[in-house]
Image (cartoon, rainbow, N blue to C red; front, side):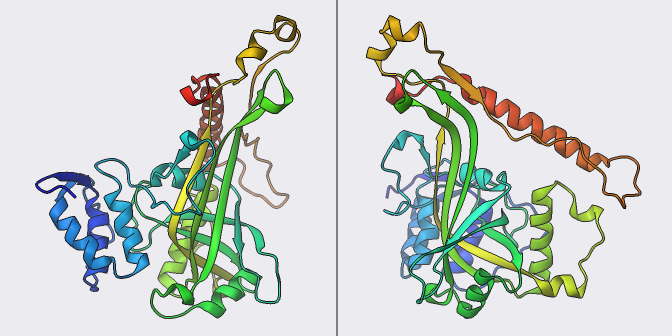
Amino acid sequence: MPNATHYHYSGRALLRLQAIVFQRPIALPRDKVYPSNSHLSYAYLDILYHVASNTAALRNLCDRSIETMGKSLVYPKYPRSTLNRYKHRGTYELGKIHSIVNECAVLHVSFPAGPDDPFPAILPMIGQMGSFEYPSADINEPLDCYLHGYVSSRIMNLARATNGEGDAQSQRLPVSISAAHVDGFILSLTPNSHSYNYRSAILHGYATVVTDEAEKHWAMKLVTNGVVEDRYDHTRVPPNKVEMTSTTILRVRIVDGSGKIRDGSVSDERYDRENKALTSKVWTGVVPVWQVMGEPIPAPENEVKEVPEHIRGFIDRVNERNKAYAHDAAVVGLPKEEQH
């Protein structure tokens, strides 16, 4: 690692790293926004890295930081998370992966079902990326994934049974989290070259049940606002004791993650493109696909005449964003790896 060189590093992430390495908490005001353009010498980061490298979990956090080299923070690569096919479509950037997860209405979470069941379990769940310790952390920084579920569901019972003190991986439930969006249907000259424009992400981490009341309330607000922006404060809050008791929140400490993104138009082989008999009869192109939120339908018991602005605004913003992304993805140039 070169000396006398500085690299761009998040001040907040640095404080987190130092707190873990030196095993003492650093008191940070919860409403303070820490600068994202702090500079740190390689020599100091090298010291932190070697101090922290005694455990895999701490080394992972350091690896995320060291791999940035002045760019966006990235997840460390492991065989389970490293892309092999269409590597050019892959990303390990925290910001891109977290955005894919947060914009996905349903996350699929898989976990070991238990010693008596040979099949891994998988559940559709609602979740959001966030940091209770550093609530001002943005999408590009290390975040946990908070999952919302019923108190007696199987994943909650398993996580509760494995909850332990400290950060030992053996005391936490290993989970894999998947999120995906379809942005277009690629209609090519041959069936084999049909495809999707898509964004997908996979996270690996260890889940524990949130027991701290303040963190649980914070996570419920995070997840609720992940469904509809600013919805939490427009409802009857805080949740009552029965609601808090029947709901369980899982915090997943992310170990690694990867994303895969395909955009662009058709990618046909040259010999097919030069076949005039074929090209003259087969339409090719992209059908953009995006999720649309419709006109709100009031409940039979609803007494509010007008749809609130926080709902109207959210619908308009999301519909515009989804449509724009799908259209842009359909016309962007193909990467050289897919130009036949």
